[in-house]
Amino acid sequence: MYIKKYYIIFCFVFIGLYAASQNNSSYLIKNYNINPEDTNKLFLQIDNVNFIKNYEYFGSIAEGYTLLGFNISPTFVYIPDSKIKLRLGGNFLSYYGRENELEASLLASLQYKINPNLHFILGNIYGTLNHKLIGPLLSFERYLNNNVENGIQFIWDSDRIFTDLWLDWEQQIFQDDPFQEKFNVGLSSEFIIFKKSDQYSFSIPFQNLIRHEGGQINSNRNEPLTTIFNNATGLSFSRNIQNKLIHKFNFTAYIVNYQDLSPTKRQMYIDGTASYSTFTLANNNFYFLFGYWYGKQYIAPIGNPIFETYSRTNFYVEEPIRQLITGNFNYQKDILDGINLGIRLETFYDIPGKNFEYAWAVIVVFDKRFFLKEF
Picture 1 (cartoon, one colour):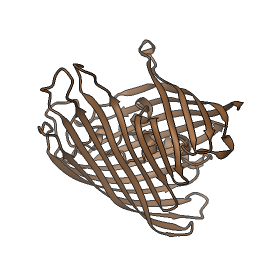
Picture 2: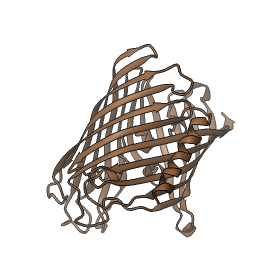
Picture 3: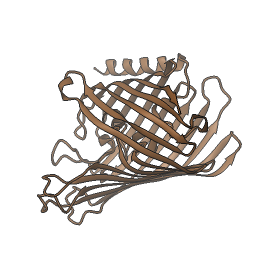
């Protein structure tokens, strides 16, 4: 069994080292900019993600499973002014083998460019990976199967500062509904404190996420409110390298926190802390991340569950202190214009339990805009 695991890792690394393509993460991030040249034009935007992700988890905290399906969003995009973008469309999620359970959502948004650096979005916001949160706060899997976020968003993007402030309203309630409302509030920022041309830079990432479940008008008003706060603050150093194989490396050290802000405490722990250090090597087609995670009584409701110190599926199973060595490999190839192939491999070594776990994914992304009409 262990020979098979290491053989899979070797194959992924070998493929990534000898393939060529464009930037390794750009195909996963949605472009929110408004191009003045598109004023008075109507477009059809097609976003499609086909994926298979397999989790080989063998420990007591997180269980293994497989996701296989697709996510498609056809959207009409109209730009009536150089500062305004309107979007209207739908999102459809389906898992292979359960095609009769198609999940459909309506997408609609208004985006206003307040000034050259500040964007305001109301409706369907730019979510999941666009927030630039680390995995212990927001799981990568949400990009595949929970990619629709609706609410309010402010994005500030300048040479030295990136800030994303948003409200994602997951579940609305009306009078006497039998369930609670759910929403997430987030603030993700990065401040460049020193930069020397395009050679190297020091920055401070600052990430916050609040998960709330509650309400006052649902039928089961005796169900306690839940409010969970997660934070990650760190220091990051990046340097560009003129090398055929490696173009950039980055080192980031985070202090991560968890706190239960609920009036009635129901979590296994009231608060917790963690440290997360990562070292990344990248070029135009791949990046490799090596990291170390030390968590004490850490909980994150929508983060990657493998970083938590208790099990979401096995009741009363806990590891109050969790130490992991992580190794993530990501590879991207631009197959055709607007079609990208991505391969991901995530490895986790549980130091106290001496347990090796991993997950791999193959993702094909279609991202294409078609001109329809000019007014």
